[in-house]
Length: 308
Image (cartoon, helix red, strand yellow):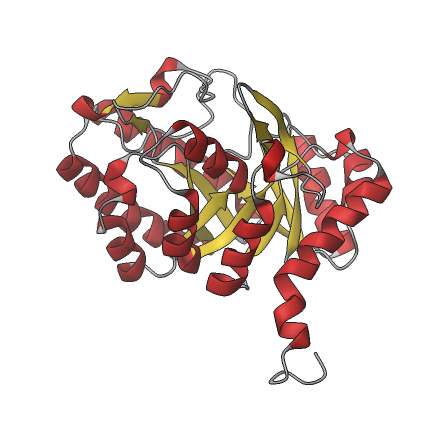
Protein backbone atom coordinates (compact mmCIF):
# COMPACT_ATOMS: atom_id res chain seq x y z
CA UNK A 1 0.00 0.00 0.00
CA UNK A 2 3.03 2.27 -0.06
CA UNK A 3 2.05 3.38 -3.58
CA UNK A 4 -1.50 4.41 -2.57
CA UNK A 5 -2.78 7.99 -2.44
CA UNK A 6 -6.02 9.79 -1.61
CA UNK A 7 -7.40 13.02 -2.99
CA UNK A 8 -8.29 16.21 -1.19
CA UNK A 9 -10.36 18.41 -3.48
CA UNK A 10 -11.89 21.72 -2.50
CA UNK A 11 -9.88 22.04 0.71
CA UNK A 12 -8.23 19.91 3.36
CA UNK A 13 -10.89 17.75 5.02
CA UNK A 14 -9.65 16.20 8.26
CA UNK A 15 -12.69 13.91 8.44
CA UNK A 16 -11.86 12.45 5.03
CA UNK A 17 -8.18 12.31 5.95
CA UNK A 18 -8.79 10.26 9.10
CA UNK A 19 -11.18 7.88 7.30
CA UNK A 20 -9.33 7.44 4.01
CA UNK A 21 -5.64 7.82 4.74
CA UNK A 22 -3.49 5.04 6.19
CA UNK A 23 -0.05 5.43 7.76
CA UNK A 24 1.62 3.35 5.04
CA UNK A 25 0.12 5.36 2.16
CA UNK A 26 2.34 7.42 -0.11
CA UNK A 27 0.54 10.74 -0.09
CA UNK A 28 -2.25 13.14 -1.02
CA UNK A 29 -3.28 14.83 -4.26
CA UNK A 30 -4.66 18.34 -3.74
CA UNK A 31 -6.86 20.42 -6.02
CA UNK A 32 -8.86 23.66 -5.95
CA UNK A 33 -8.16 24.78 -2.38
CA UNK A 34 -10.21 27.89 -1.61
CA UNK A 35 -7.81 29.74 0.68
CA UNK A 36 -4.22 30.18 1.80
CA UNK A 37 -5.26 28.70 5.14
CA UNK A 38 -6.26 25.44 3.47
CA UNK A 39 -2.91 25.28 1.68
CA UNK A 40 -1.09 25.91 4.95
CA UNK A 41 -3.10 23.16 6.62
CA UNK A 42 -1.99 20.76 3.88
CA UNK A 43 1.66 21.74 4.34
CA UNK A 44 1.46 21.28 8.11
CA UNK A 45 -0.36 17.94 7.80
CA UNK A 46 2.23 16.67 5.32
CA UNK A 47 5.03 17.58 7.71
CA UNK A 48 3.26 16.08 10.72
CA UNK A 49 2.16 12.82 9.09
CA UNK A 50 5.13 12.59 6.71
CA UNK A 51 3.27 12.07 3.47
CA UNK A 52 4.11 13.26 -0.05
CA UNK A 53 1.97 15.75 -1.92
CA UNK A 54 0.94 16.13 -5.53
CA UNK A 55 -1.19 18.82 -7.16
CA UNK A 56 -4.05 18.33 -9.57
CA UNK A 57 -3.90 21.70 -11.32
CA UNK A 58 -4.92 24.17 -10.10
CA UNK A 59 -3.97 24.17 -6.43
CA UNK A 60 -6.03 27.32 -5.87
CA UNK A 61 -9.70 27.53 -6.69
CA UNK A 62 -10.57 30.51 -8.86
CA UNK A 63 -14.24 30.85 -9.88
CA UNK A 64 -13.27 33.39 -12.52
CA UNK A 65 -11.22 30.83 -14.46
CA UNK A 66 -11.72 27.42 -15.98
CA UNK A 67 -10.21 24.69 -13.85
CA UNK A 68 -8.12 23.28 -16.70
CA UNK A 69 -5.51 25.17 -18.68
CA UNK A 70 -6.37 25.34 -22.40
CA UNK A 71 -2.77 24.99 -23.57
CA UNK A 72 -3.74 23.30 -26.85
CA UNK A 73 -6.31 25.87 -27.92
CA UNK A 74 -6.29 26.87 -31.60
CA UNK A 75 -6.53 30.46 -30.37
CA UNK A 76 -3.07 31.98 -29.83
CA UNK A 77 -4.22 34.34 -27.06
CA UNK A 78 -6.01 31.55 -25.19
CA UNK A 79 -2.90 29.35 -25.33
CA UNK A 80 -0.71 32.17 -24.08
CA UNK A 81 -3.11 32.84 -21.21
CA UNK A 82 -3.05 29.15 -20.26
CA UNK A 83 0.73 29.10 -19.86
CA UNK A 84 0.66 32.36 -17.92
CA UNK A 85 -1.92 30.94 -15.51
CA UNK A 86 0.17 27.80 -14.99
CA UNK A 87 3.23 29.96 -14.32
CA UNK A 88 1.31 31.88 -11.64
CA UNK A 89 0.28 28.62 -9.96
CA UNK A 90 3.82 27.26 -10.03
CA UNK A 91 5.07 30.41 -8.32
CA UNK A 92 2.36 30.10 -5.68
CA UNK A 93 2.94 26.44 -4.86
CA UNK A 94 6.69 26.78 -4.29
CA UNK A 95 6.17 26.58 -0.53
CA UNK A 96 4.27 23.30 -0.90
CA UNK A 97 7.01 21.74 -3.07
CA UNK A 98 4.71 19.11 -4.66
CA UNK A 99 6.28 15.98 -6.09
CA UNK A 100 4.13 16.31 -9.19
CA UNK A 101 1.70 18.68 -10.88
CA UNK A 102 -1.03 17.13 -13.02
CA UNK A 103 -2.79 18.69 -16.01
CA UNK A 104 -5.62 17.35 -18.18
CA UNK A 105 -4.61 16.44 -21.74
CA UNK A 106 -5.74 17.16 -24.35
CA UNK A 107 -7.29 20.46 -23.28
CA UNK A 108 -9.45 21.59 -24.84
CA UNK A 109 -10.71 18.08 -25.53
CA UNK A 110 -10.83 17.35 -29.26
CA UNK A 111 -14.14 15.69 -30.01
CA UNK A 112 -14.33 12.86 -32.52
CA UNK A 113 -17.23 13.80 -34.79
CA UNK A 114 -18.29 10.14 -35.04
CA UNK A 115 -19.09 9.97 -31.31
CA UNK A 116 -22.03 11.26 -29.25
CA UNK A 117 -20.32 13.14 -26.40
CA UNK A 118 -23.51 14.37 -24.74
CA UNK A 119 -22.85 12.35 -21.58
CA UNK A 120 -19.26 13.56 -21.16
CA UNK A 121 -18.90 16.00 -18.30
CA UNK A 122 -17.77 19.48 -19.29
CA UNK A 123 -18.03 22.40 -16.91
CA UNK A 124 -17.80 24.99 -19.69
CA UNK A 125 -18.26 25.16 -23.47
CA UNK A 126 -14.65 26.33 -23.85
CA UNK A 127 -13.38 22.96 -22.60
CA UNK A 128 -13.86 21.22 -25.94
CA UNK A 129 -13.43 21.79 -29.65
CA UNK A 130 -14.13 19.63 -32.70
CA UNK A 131 -11.68 17.88 -34.98
CA UNK A 132 -12.33 20.46 -37.71
CA UNK A 133 -11.01 23.12 -35.31
CA UNK A 134 -7.57 21.55 -34.79
CA UNK A 135 -5.71 19.34 -37.24
CA UNK A 136 -3.45 16.47 -36.23
CA UNK A 137 -0.42 18.49 -37.32
CA UNK A 138 -1.50 21.46 -35.18
CA UNK A 139 -2.00 19.18 -32.19
CA UNK A 140 1.47 17.73 -32.67
CA UNK A 141 3.07 21.17 -32.87
CA UNK A 142 1.21 22.50 -29.81
CA UNK A 143 2.01 19.30 -27.89
CA UNK A 144 5.72 19.59 -28.70
CA UNK A 145 5.75 23.10 -27.28
CA UNK A 146 3.81 21.93 -24.19
CA UNK A 147 6.23 19.08 -23.50
CA UNK A 148 9.30 21.29 -23.88
CA UNK A 149 7.79 23.98 -21.64
CA UNK A 150 6.60 21.59 -18.92
CA UNK A 151 9.88 19.69 -18.94
CA UNK A 152 11.78 22.94 -18.42
CA UNK A 153 9.44 24.12 -15.66
CA UNK A 154 9.61 20.72 -13.97
CA UNK A 155 13.39 21.04 -13.70
CA UNK A 156 13.17 24.66 -12.59
CA UNK A 157 10.55 24.07 -9.88
CA UNK A 158 11.52 20.47 -9.09
CA UNK A 159 8.25 18.69 -9.80
CA UNK A 160 7.25 15.91 -12.18
CA UNK A 161 4.78 17.03 -14.85
CA UNK A 162 1.93 14.56 -15.32
CA UNK A 163 -0.67 14.64 -18.10
CA UNK A 164 -4.02 13.02 -17.33
CA UNK A 165 -5.93 11.76 -20.35
CA UNK A 166 -9.29 13.42 -20.77
CA UNK A 167 -11.63 12.54 -23.64
CA UNK A 168 -9.54 11.18 -26.52
CA UNK A 169 -9.96 11.17 -30.27
CA UNK A 170 -8.12 9.16 -32.89
CA UNK A 171 -5.28 11.69 -32.98
CA UNK A 172 -4.06 10.21 -29.69
CA UNK A 173 -4.98 6.54 -29.78
CA UNK A 174 -4.33 5.81 -33.48
CA UNK A 175 -1.08 7.76 -33.93
CA UNK A 176 2.32 7.54 -32.26
CA UNK A 177 3.34 11.20 -31.89
CA UNK A 178 2.44 11.26 -28.18
CA UNK A 179 4.40 8.11 -27.46
CA UNK A 180 7.40 9.64 -29.22
CA UNK A 181 7.11 12.77 -27.07
CA UNK A 182 6.94 10.65 -23.91
CA UNK A 183 10.12 8.90 -25.01
CA UNK A 184 11.84 12.19 -25.86
CA UNK A 185 10.77 13.77 -22.55
CA UNK A 186 10.94 10.88 -20.04
CA UNK A 187 10.48 13.26 -17.10
CA UNK A 188 6.87 13.81 -18.23
CA UNK A 189 4.48 11.01 -17.29
CA UNK A 190 0.82 10.13 -17.71
CA UNK A 191 -2.17 9.67 -15.43
CA UNK A 192 -4.82 7.16 -16.51
CA UNK A 193 -8.32 7.41 -15.06
CA UNK A 194 -10.22 4.11 -14.91
CA UNK A 195 -13.66 5.69 -14.73
CA UNK A 196 -13.02 8.00 -17.67
CA UNK A 197 -11.47 5.20 -19.76
CA UNK A 198 -14.43 2.94 -19.11
CA UNK A 199 -16.92 5.67 -19.97
CA UNK A 200 -15.27 6.32 -23.33
CA UNK A 201 -15.02 2.58 -23.97
CA UNK A 202 -18.80 2.39 -23.61
CA UNK A 203 -19.72 5.42 -25.71
CA UNK A 204 -17.06 5.28 -28.44
CA UNK A 205 -17.07 2.16 -30.67
CA UNK A 206 -13.63 3.14 -32.02
CA UNK A 207 -12.01 3.24 -28.57
CA UNK A 208 -10.59 0.26 -26.65
CA UNK A 209 -9.74 1.01 -23.02
CA UNK A 210 -7.75 -2.18 -22.51
CA UNK A 211 -5.67 -1.54 -25.63
CA UNK A 212 -4.97 2.01 -24.50
CA UNK A 213 -3.90 0.75 -21.08
CA UNK A 214 -1.55 -1.75 -22.68
CA UNK A 215 -0.03 0.97 -24.85
CA UNK A 216 0.32 3.80 -22.35
CA UNK A 217 0.55 2.36 -18.82
CA UNK A 218 4.32 2.01 -19.20
CA UNK A 219 4.47 5.81 -19.36
CA UNK A 220 2.15 6.36 -16.38
CA UNK A 221 3.24 7.58 -12.97
CA UNK A 222 -0.30 7.69 -11.62
CA UNK A 223 -3.62 5.87 -11.88
CA UNK A 224 -6.83 7.58 -10.81
CA UNK A 225 -8.88 4.66 -9.55
CA UNK A 226 -12.65 4.56 -9.17
CA UNK A 227 -15.61 2.70 -10.59
CA UNK A 228 -18.76 3.73 -12.45
CA UNK A 229 -21.83 1.80 -13.58
CA UNK A 230 -23.03 2.27 -17.15
CA UNK A 231 -26.06 0.56 -18.62
CA UNK A 232 -28.69 2.70 -20.32
CA UNK A 233 -27.45 5.62 -18.21
CA UNK A 234 -24.33 6.54 -16.25
CA UNK A 235 -24.73 5.93 -12.52
CA UNK A 236 -22.62 5.81 -9.38
CA UNK A 237 -19.72 7.86 -10.67
CA UNK A 238 -16.52 7.83 -8.62
CA UNK A 239 -17.70 4.79 -6.69
CA UNK A 240 -15.05 2.89 -4.70
CA UNK A 241 -13.79 -0.26 -6.41
CA UNK A 242 -15.01 -3.46 -4.74
CA UNK A 243 -14.70 -7.07 -5.93
CA UNK A 244 -18.46 -7.68 -5.98
CA UNK A 245 -19.16 -4.87 -8.50
CA UNK A 246 -19.64 -7.07 -11.55
CA UNK A 247 -18.96 -5.99 -15.16
CA UNK A 248 -22.00 -8.10 -16.01
CA UNK A 249 -24.09 -5.48 -14.20
CA UNK A 250 -22.49 -2.57 -16.03
CA UNK A 251 -19.57 -1.84 -13.72
CA UNK A 252 -16.10 -1.21 -15.13
CA UNK A 253 -13.85 -4.30 -15.40
CA UNK A 254 -11.54 -2.98 -12.69
CA UNK A 255 -9.74 -6.27 -12.07
CA UNK A 256 -8.86 -6.53 -15.78
CA UNK A 257 -7.57 -2.94 -15.75
CA UNK A 258 -5.49 -3.53 -12.63
CA UNK A 259 -4.00 -6.72 -14.04
CA UNK A 260 -2.86 -4.80 -17.12
CA UNK A 261 -1.42 -2.08 -14.90
CA UNK A 262 0.41 -4.71 -12.82
CA UNK A 263 1.88 -6.31 -15.95
CA UNK A 264 2.87 -3.05 -17.66
CA UNK A 265 3.93 -0.82 -14.76
CA UNK A 266 3.50 -2.13 -11.23
CA UNK A 267 5.28 0.94 -9.78
CA UNK A 268 2.58 3.44 -10.77
CA UNK A 269 0.98 5.25 -7.85
CA UNK A 270 -2.71 4.48 -7.23
CA UNK A 271 -4.78 7.53 -6.32
CA UNK A 272 -8.22 6.55 -5.02
CA UNK A 273 -10.36 9.15 -6.75
CA UNK A 274 -13.56 7.91 -5.23
CA UNK A 275 -16.34 9.01 -2.90
CA UNK A 276 -15.50 7.11 0.24
CA UNK A 277 -18.60 8.59 1.89
CA UNK A 278 -20.69 6.13 -0.17
CA UNK A 279 -19.37 3.09 1.72
CA UNK A 280 -18.51 2.08 5.27
CA UNK A 281 -15.03 2.16 6.76
CA UNK A 282 -15.02 -1.64 6.66
CA UNK A 283 -15.81 -1.69 2.93
CA UNK A 284 -13.18 0.98 2.33
CA UNK A 285 -10.59 -1.28 3.92
CA UNK A 286 -11.81 -4.11 1.67
CA UNK A 287 -11.34 -1.82 -1.32
CA UNK A 288 -7.75 -1.10 -0.35
CA UNK A 289 -6.97 -4.75 0.41
CA UNK A 290 -8.46 -5.98 -2.88
CA UNK A 291 -6.45 -3.52 -4.97
CA UNK A 292 -3.29 -4.28 -3.04
CA UNK A 293 -3.81 -8.02 -3.55
CA UNK A 294 -4.27 -7.68 -7.33
CA UNK A 295 -1.28 -5.39 -7.81
CA UNK A 296 1.16 -7.23 -5.59
CA UNK A 297 0.17 -10.91 -5.50
CA UNK A 298 2.43 -11.93 -8.41
CA UNK A 299 5.48 -10.34 -6.84
CA UNK A 300 4.71 -11.75 -3.41
CA UNK A 301 4.13 -15.25 -4.72
CA UNK A 302 6.93 -15.31 -7.29
CA UNK A 303 9.62 -17.96 -6.63
CA UNK A 304 12.14 -15.52 -8.02
CA UNK A 305 11.39 -13.06 -5.23
CA UNK A 306 11.91 -14.96 -1.95
CA UNK A 307 11.01 -13.23 1.23
CA UNK A 308 8.81 -10.57 -0.36
